[in-house]
Structures are given as structure tokens and as C-alpha cells.
Amino acid sequence: MNEKEAYFSGWDIGGAHLKVARCDPQGHLIDVIEIACPLWKGIEQLQQAIATAQQHLSNHDDISAITMTGELVDVFPNRRQGVSQILDCVAEFIPEDRCHIYAGELGWLHPIQAKKQWASVASRNWQATASFVASKIDNGLFVDIGSTTCDIIPLIDGQAAPSAFSDLGRQTSGELLYTGAIRTPLIALANKAPFNGQQVNIAAELFATTADCWLLLEELDITQIHDDSADGLPWNIENSCRRIARLLGADTDDHSTTQWRQLAQWFAKQQQSLVTDACLQVLSKHPNLENTSIITAGIGRFIGHNCATLLGRPYKDFNALTSSDMESSNDHASAVAIALLACQQLT
Image 1 (spheres, rainbow, N blue to C red):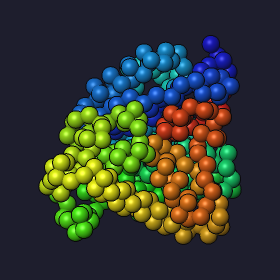
Image 2 (image 1 turned 60 degrees about the horizontal axis):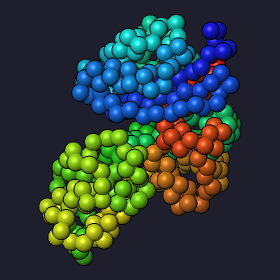
Image 3 (image 1 turned 135 degrees about the vertical axis):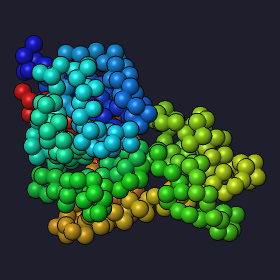
Image 4 (image 1 turned 60 degrees about the vertical axis):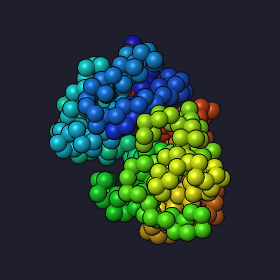
């Protein structure tokens, strides 16, 4: 099979999940999946996730495009070693001649080159997604809110226009915000909260996460959550109420479900404010983007929708740019973008 006839798989290798999108030679999406991959537990987690993905997708012969953020997990001594070990793991499953590593402004690299240019490979999934969106939208603000982080990237004249490329630089500029719709501990949002008419100090423990709030508020469905909960118990209304109650040193039946849902609403508002403030920080550098659209992606894109409403701007979902009606392409935009970019650029 030559590359003009090839199918493409886009692999987004994160620290908590593996996301894979597959398209045909014409760039039509076929499938998008997410597999839990707690990489901080060891590289064997990634081995198992890749094997599961290939079994599900039957994509062994595809041209594979790779991007990653998993090099940040603390199982690796540093990011350079993280990139190298992840690429070694990928090589166990994907032949080198069919494996292309996304390296931002350096383009596509083979694995040996990618190890040498590791700084342009590490944590560049946001750049792949923003570049794809910019090829469809000339000017606007791209907001991708996943399970763990939020990327906020200005789009100017058909190009992604980040202030920085490193995570340190992006966290400084507001273009990378460590808050997400599932895995963020609620203690990261506030150290006290209003409850039953009083301000209550919150336990500085990982008792509950943002998924508990958004589940109670019916913005997330149980089927969308592939992470373990804070206490390891299933995702449901009763358990989410109990986890949130623990933050106050209370039990679920001490108060009504309505009160726990109101507390979840308050935490949700704190997260919404963080994201909106970051959007305003980024926009403050780009007054030429006044009144442009916000393009949203990620499992937490409903937060981006709310930002657009608060800022008085129209919004559209990433899905609208891919001619796909699969909800999973919205949820896992980086994997979709890397597959579609590969289809456009590697043939």
C-alpha cells in the first residue's frame, strides 16, 4: 500500500489517557477512542493501552502520527527521558517507517530525530490541534478543555499564534491552565466554600474532583469518565455527593442532595471564573480579536461555551470543522487533529 492509499491513525499519548483517531485516505473520520492509561504507574500501562487500541481499531498497517504530553509524568526522571521512553514503547507496536512524530514548527520527524529534538516533541498536542483549527478559522480564540488542562490559543490570520511553546512559558501567558473537567482536585479551586449559610474551611485532601461537580450538574455523563474517582468508588450521584461532603468533614445524609448540588455549583463557578480570566488574559494581548468566535473542544467544552456567553462572543465546536457527527471527535480533538494533519501533509 502506498501512502496515497493509506489510512491514518493519530495518537495522543497523555499521562492519564491514550486517545486515538483514525481516518481514511480522504480524511474522513472512521473512529475515535479513549483508553485509560495512568502512565505514572509505569510504561507497561502505555504498552497495554496501545495493544488495546490496535486490537480495537485494527490499524496495524496505518500511517501513525504521534503527539504526546505523557513525558511529564513523574515515573520519568525528566521530560527528555520521558519522550525517549515513550517513543521506545511506541516502536514495539508501530514500525519506524510508518511512524511520524509531530514536532510543531519542525514538522514531522522520524523517531530517531524526535529523540534528538525532544523539546519540540514534548507537550505539543495543543499546537497540532490549534494549527488544524487555524486552517479552518482565520481569527478567533481556541479553547480546549480536557480532563486535566485547558489550552487557550489565539488564532490570527489563519495561523495559531501562541506567546510561548514551553509549558512554563504557556502557564505564564495564561495559554495553559492546569484545570480540567474531570481530574482537578476541588481543593485546587478554593480553600473555603459557602455551605448552609456559612463559610466552611475545606480539607486539603484529594477527596473529590471536578468530575463530581459536573456529574451532579449533569454536564458530564458517566460514560464520558474513564478515570478513577478520588476514592476509587463508581461514578454516580450518591458517591459524588459523599466525596464532596468529605471536603467539609461531613457525611452525605447530614444534608440534602440539593445542598450538595448547590455546593457543586459553587465549585463549578470557581472553575468557570479561572477559565474566563485566563481567556481575558490571553485576549488582552490581542485586541484585534475583538468580537471573534471562540472555538471549543475537549470533554469540558461546555465550560468554553459558558466563557463565550460571558464574554458576549459566538462559539462553535471543533466538530463543525471536521465534518464529523461523532461526539468523541469533540472530546478528543488532539487525536483527531493529528490524524487529519497527517492525512493532509504526509501524502
